Each structure stands twice: as structure tokens, then as C-alpha cells.
Length: 521
Image: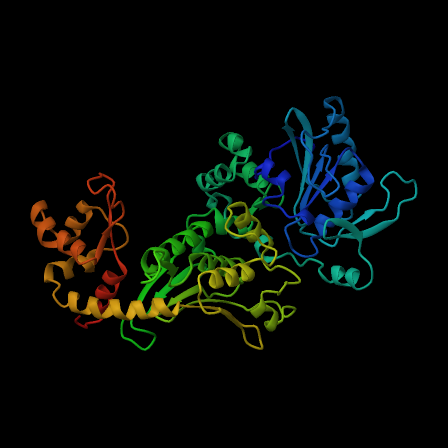
């Protein structure tokens, strides 16, 4: 809140109030304007002691005994809005160094609310007076402890003081990147997806104003700079600023010692990178197994690797990796397991034995802003829930226990997701059948497999093969490849759709990789 001009939040306010995307320790409800308590809480959010991304103060929202918001809210009288804003501006100037949250005036069920968004500050530690209205003021440091604001004392105060000028990497300015490198369409699409009221105003705002509203732009008005988190999520090519900010999927169809290797890198805006990598692995390497029992009408169903476990492991790796280390997140797929590798390892405050049991809790998060955007997109929950969810997904699927590994230097972190034993047997049996079938693949189909990359239309495939006769292409190339399950439709329920595309199956990928390596079927 550089001034008292009302703005809109870059999140969905009903979600905020229901605490579906924001934890209780990051939100505080106030029935009315209470400057002493509110300034202390803003100071605590600015200090962001645990790197959670600051928090929100909602003025005019009452809650029940369990801390849940009550609807309709009590609200703030319309006649008091201007007066409170003036007093708030004056009170915020008492925080040392000066700190101003973003103010948004909202209406919920006909009642006026004042929402203060207080991101973690760039100049911590901050301190605020115990009583704003006192004649003789005493300044103290404040931090959040669960859902309360408390004075920082003893070791906590010393640790807070040690954080001077230590702003997490993702919340730092990137002074060498031009403001124009941020993509307005990507920013607008994000606001629409999360249901932010700011989406309606975005087309009318300048790129700088929109970036400041979303807290991905900072610095003085004469030289605004994008923040690292903004470049990761809202630039078409983040890798030009952050080498290896990508996810590499590497498959070993015949095992790590085999000759066949399938590599596919995923780059681009961070959320898109994660989603595309997950979709690729799910489409090509995850499959459900159905086992029928002679004495029972019901069959047993399980996956070779449950998608929920893979999703948690990959999103956690993207969330908690260091983007200052030029190493990509890697997903390695073999017949025995799926492995997710990231750099560096967990904080030293996390004990490895606690990781294995799902009881690990990190003392401080590495990327507070990356986590904030991933939470808004429903890609993660944060608060150390990832490993318990991986354990639960593997157990529910009947899979072996996953393994979590790091070294003494915490230089890397490895999550191993073993393939279900019965799925492994099924894969071996399928591989034998596939070897017999692919031995009869024609030269035309082999040519098709070599040019098929990603999702391609019939016309694109014909052009890549240099073929002009559509029926010859269909009879000699496409139909045999579909029949042998080396190629599949993206829309199998609409085979004649104008939007139909074709892509390699897992068998097709293996076949193409063998041919590319100079090995026959």
C-alpha cells in the first residue's frame, strides 16, 4: 500500500476467507479497526520468520470460537472506510523500517471488508511499537507463531536479527531483466484461473501496475524490476534468465544398463512445465493393471506407480529446489522404479529418519513465493504435507514403500517410487509380446515413428514424411501404426474430429529409440 488507493487481490477472496489456500498462521481476522494489534501483526508478517510468504489481515470479518469466519461478516461501516485508511497509513509509517501492505476494499454478502496483504518484506527485520496510540512508544520485533502474533524474544529474536537483508531468492529483484520480459497474457491467465477479482481490471492496468499488484514487480517507480518468481511463472522463456530451470524426463525402457534411452526436457513458465511433464509421464509410462480372481466377481485394480505419488514428488522437487544451482529436476523412469532427483537436499534441521516416516517438518522454506503461486494453482498444499501424501498414495495402491535419500552434505534429494511388483511382471510379459509384434513392423511405420514428435495432425505427419497422397499415407503408415499400438489418437472417442492429433505410445517410444540408436527390434 504505497498510498491508500484501494486495489484488488491477486487471489480468490472467498478461498482466502475459507482458508482453502491460505493456512491459519497466514491469516488474521479482526472484527473492527484495532491499530495496536493490527500493526503488530503486519510487522510479524513482514518479518516472515519462517519464509511462508507473509500473510493477510481481514478487517470487518468476525469468526467463531474455532477461528472459522462467520457469514455474513460483521463488516466495516462505509462511512468509516476513508477514516480507517488515513489512520492505517499513519500507523504503518511507525513500522521500522517503513513497511506498507497492499490494501483491498472488498464486499462480501453486502458487507464491506478491508483486506491487507502483507508479503514478506525486503528489509527485515522489522519492528513496531507495542501501542501505536501510546505517547511514549516502545518498539519490539514480532513474529507469527501458529495463528498468533508474538514478540520475538531470546533465541528467536537473535535468529530474526541474523536474517538481516536475507531475502529468499524467489522474492529478490532481477535488475538485469527488463520489465517487458513479463508476459501480460500469462499473468492474466493466472488471475482468471485462481478466480481473482483483479482479472477484470488487468487489461486496463499498465504492466508495471499489474506486476506490483501481484507483487512480482518491485523497486522504485523510476526503475521497476521484475522479481525472480515473476520471471519463473510469467515469462515465456524463463531459461534465458535461469539456466536449467526445467524438468528433464529420462526413460530407460530396458533398464539403466540398456541401450535405449528416451529423453524429453520440459521448459517454459514454471506451472506449465510441471503440468506438461506430469501429463507426459502419465500418458506414456503409467498404466493400470486389472487382476481377476477365479473365486470372486470383483477384480483387483492398481497402478504400476500411482499418479498422486508422482505428482507430489515432482511438485515438491520444483518447489524446494534451489534455482541458483544450474541443475534441472530430473524424472528417471525404469522398469523397476520412478526416481525424482533435485538439488540441493532438505534443510539440515530435517532428520532423514523423519522423512522416511512422513514426520519431517522443515524449519524454514526455501522458496516462499514459488510455494505461494503453486498453492493458488492447487498444485501443492505446503506445510510439509507432500511426503505423507506420497506415503499414503503408495500404500493405498499396494506398492512398496517409497525411499527418500540425501547425503551428509545435503547436496541432493532423491525420491524413489518402486513399481508395483505385479505391474513389473505384467510389463515383462508385455515386453515379450511387443518384441514379437514389432519385429514385423514395416519400413513405412518405422519412418512414421521417426518423424512423430509430440502431438501431430495427419497433415503435419504427411508433410514431415513428404507424402502427398492421403489414402496411401493412411493405409501404409497410419493404420498399421495404430493397429500395432505404436501410435495412438489424442481423441480416440472422436476419430474423425478436425482437432484429432496422433502421438507415440510407450511401445512406440521404445521402438523409435531403438531405431534411433541403430538397434533393430
